[in-house]
Length: 435
Ligand code: ACO
Image (cartoon, rainbow, N blue to C red; front, side, top):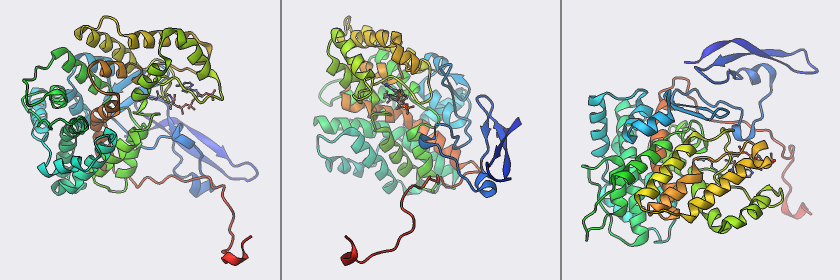
């Protein structure tokens, strides 16, 4: 629970004798927040914050970001330590339950996820309804939303056991759905999950195995995938997570809420950025063309952005980008790619941008997406799958945030206000009187 800070903020409404002292609430770290819940009732005004850049929409104990220092903590643990030492399934337990599991808790949780990896057999038919060239995110939105039509026995959000089973189902089934969306697109048979494999191994297996040949996974690539999943697992109240919370605040079932999160993640300003980075690198083409491209980014009339750079919260190096860069080298080494023109281009682009006044003064640094696309491409993922992969990882964050919200006694339906600038009251005119 938040505490009261030893301070407050007083608002005087100019031209009236009205004023209101707002309490400041202190979190465990980070800036205090002004509690404006009594603002309208006392002063008759709302606050205006498009994009919610200054607004805390909820209290949360899950993830903390210090954007100025480039710090990211899951339940208090630095992302660097988790990416180095923990498995994704440990991280999933941590995000959902608040603490790292002991051996017995981990075994039980891991088993719980593994036994839910299969899809209801009738869901196969859903895939066949899509065009072969459908974007995997379109398939994901549809099939994840459709889970609520198959798992009626876990839809009562007021029942903790239903919430627990839905969480397992979502975390376990989204990789299967994602891999099947890919198999469907390339015309290969669906590969059923193999529950002897770890989460990351199983996902790579369902993506890459074919019934006609034995499949041999690579421990380095599985480890890289596991780390990519950890790095993307949660990121506090970003657009897709806020979408999940907003949908969930109405009492909608968790499958519908996660489908809403997937839709929100799809955009190029959010999860679609890693796909956009590769497209951008392809368009730049060579190191020689970088200065020209940078000039276009800086031109206010061009609408061109350096994709994979900048972040609403990070005004410093995104800590995930550093780990991604290192993982990128490990993956390329494992695959025997000594010279990757895309990596050379990205490295040079980053070097030039970080020295450029425009990027320095706007505090634009590489974000997690700048290198993730290069790794995923090297691992054989087509660009169209990048955002879907992000959705696999983020499902655990969405589910954790959804669960936290449902269990929060202060939870109410999310319902922002607005600054109305439309027409004043006017009356209907019959068609013949309109000019
Ligand atoms: N390239 C060039 N200029 C940029 C970039 C960029 N990537 N990002 C921000 N800017 C500039 C803007 O033009 C603006 O400049 P101005 O003040 O001179 O007009 C200023 O920086 C602030 O930009 P906003 O769009 O207001 O910043 P906001 O916090 O709303 O946007 C965002 C954050 C959407 C991530 C933005 O930086 C961006 O579009 N980046 C590229 C897309 C990307 O990589 N997204 C991934 C985000 S991480 C994730 O979702 C996993």
